[in-house]
Image (tube, rainbow, N blue to C red; front, side, top):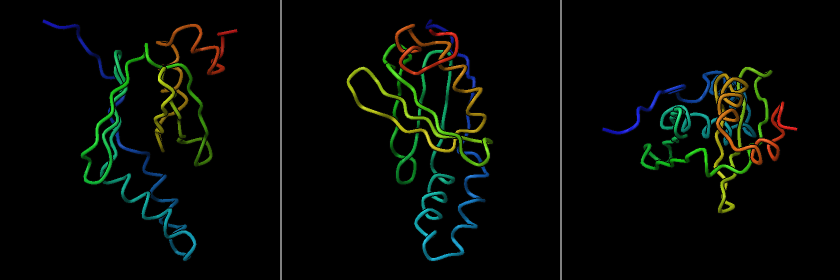
Length: 131
């Protein structure tokens, strides 16, 4: 019997990301953004639990990445869509990065994740209360 894993967020990208990029798609220049948003809406899924971050994506949702909180050394966030959603870049101990695009409720998700990080990772991320 393993340790219980409680799900905090299980979601795809924020729907506003798709809507905004569909509007951009009305111009020729915005077509690549629109195609990217459609692919994200179809196949990208986030699962954030009390033990790990799981991202399923790629073509037809065939790629899966799991990161446990102890591996995270830094998180950087960027608000999008007037702050309704945002992007996160998670850096892990081997130096590789995982980009989480169009996270719904990203401020709450960021607070939840940073609560689980080491003090050093909180400081590197600039989390409130880590100084």
